Amino acid sequence: MSSSQIKSVVSYDYYDERFHFCRPSSGPEKQAESLGSILFGDRIFNSAFNLNMKNDVSCQLLCHTDPIPKEDAEFINQCIADEYALNLMVDGLPAARDMKFDEHSTQTYKSIGVPLGDHNANVLNNHYEITIRYHVRPNGKNRVVGVNVDTYSKDIELDAKGVPQCGAAANRPGYTLKADGKDRVIYTYSVIWEESNTAWATRWDEYLSVLDPSIHWFSLVNSIVIVLFLTGMVAMILIRALHKDISRYNAAEVQEDVQEDYGWKLVHGDVFRPPVRSMWLAVIVGSGTQLIAICASTLAFAVLGFLSPSNRGALATVMVILFMIFSGIAGYVSARLYKMNGGESWKTNMLLTAVFFPGTIFGALFALNFFLIGSQSSGAVPFGTMVALFGMWGLIALPLSVAGSYLGFRKAKIEHPVRTNQIPRQIPDQPSYLKSWPSILMGGTLPFGAIFIELYFIMNSIWFHRIYYGIGFLFLVFVVLVLTCSQVTILMCYFHLCNEDYHWSWRAFMTSGAAGIYVFLYSIYYYFNKLAITSFTSSILYFGYSSIIGALLMVMTGSIGYLSCLIFLQRIFASIKVD
Image (cartoon, rainbow, N blue to C red; front, side, top):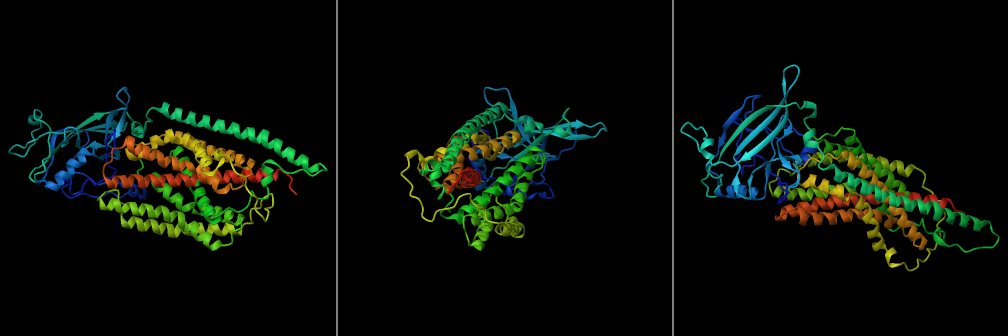
C-alpha cells in the first residue's frame, strides 16, 4: 500500500489469475503458516525469481505473459490507481524501500512492499532491481541481512533470441498496460549483492526502529500527567474528604442525641442494591477481565522479547491461545459477581459467559469474512481454519469457562459491609453535569486522552501494513490506561454518591468504557482524514473491524472501572459504623 493514503483494505494473492504474474516452472508451492499468519491473511508461495548467493545478474528475463484479457487489464490498472504493493520475501526478510520520514526530514525508514505501478503516470512496474546485503561469518559462510527492491516501468522488447533489451528501453517512456485484450507484459529483474557489516542477529533492527521516538515519549508524558492529576484528585478525596467524612460519621454514632445521616452515608442502605440486568453486567465484566488478562500477558511476553515480528503470526497465535486459556477467568469472575448480586439462574449465567462474548466476536468476524470472500481477497480466512477455531473453542475455551463458573459458584458469596434496605431510596434531581450520559462522556475523555497518540501509531500499523515495535511504550501506556480508568471511575462514583445517586454499577462500567466509544469516533475521523477509500467493501471492512476494536476496548476498560468502583465502595462503607 501507499505510504500517503490507503485506497483499499482488500488484499489479493500474488498468484491471483487476474494479475498474470510470473509463476515458477513447476508451479507455485505454498509454505506452511501458523494460525496467526492465516488469520492475518498471510499466504506465502515460492516465486520465479532465481537468486544465487553473490551472483549478480542484469536484466534477466522473468517471464513473458500471454495476452492479458481486457477485464484483467482493467483490474490491474485499478490496483495501480489504488496504489497496491507486492510483498516479497528473501530468506524470511520482507523486501522494502528506503523512505523519508517526511519532506522536512533526512531520517529514513524501511517501507515494506514493492509498488505495483506508478499511479501518477499510470504505468506498470515490470522491472525489479533487487539489492541483497549479506554478512560473511567467521567460518566463511554468508547470510542474508537485508533486502531492498527498487521498481521501474520499462517498455522492454525481446530480441530474436528472446533476450530482453533493457538498455534500449531506457529512452522510451514507461510501460502502460492497455486494456485491449492483446497486450503482453515482459517482466525482468536485476540482482546486486552487497557485503554488509550487519550481523545476522541484528538484521531486523532497521525494520523495527521506532519512528520519531520523541512523539512516543510525548504520548507517555501526556498520559502520565493525566494519571498524576487523577491520582492527586483521588488522594485528596481519600485523605481529606473521605477521612473527614468517616471520622465525622463515626463520631456522630457515639453521641447520645440521634443525628440524621448526611453526605454519601445517606445511601448506605441502597449502594449495594443489585443493578438492573445484573446477569448481563456479570457476563460482560467477566469477559472484560479475560481481555485484561490477555492484553497484560501478551504485552509482557512482547516486552520480554518472545514475540518478535520476525516470527510471522506469533502475536495473533499467542492472543488466540490466551483467549482460549483465560476463558476460565471470565467464567469465574462472572459467577462471583452474579452470585454477589443475588442471582440464582446459575446455568444461564454459565452458558451466557461461555457463549455470548466469543460468539458475538466470532459471528462479526465470520460476517466480515464473507465480504473478503466476495472480493476474492487473500485475507479471507479459509473455511477449514474457521472450523479449527470453533473446535479449539469447543475443546478448550468452553470447558475452561464452565469450570471457572463452577468454581465461582462454589465459592462463598461476596458479602457487602452494609445491609440493603427493602424499600429503595428516592434519588433527588441531579445537576445536569452529573446526569448519566454527560458524566459518562466526560469521564471517558480521560482514558481516551491517555492513549490517543499511541492509538494513531497502532492504526497506522494496522492499515498501512507497517511494523509496530514500540512495545515498551505500549506496555507503559497500557499501565497508564488501567490507572486512568480506575481513578476516573472512582472520582465520578464519589461525586454521584455525594449527590445521593446510588445507581453506580452500569454507570461505572460506562464511564471508563466510553473510551471505546471515543476510539470508534476517532476511527471515523481517521477514515476521512488519513484514508482515501472509495469502494463499498473496503468501507464495510474498515468500519466493521473498527467497531470490533472499539467494542473490545469498551468491554475491557469498562470492566476495569466497574471492579475498581466495587472495591472502592466496599472499602469506604466498611470504614463507617451503621446501625
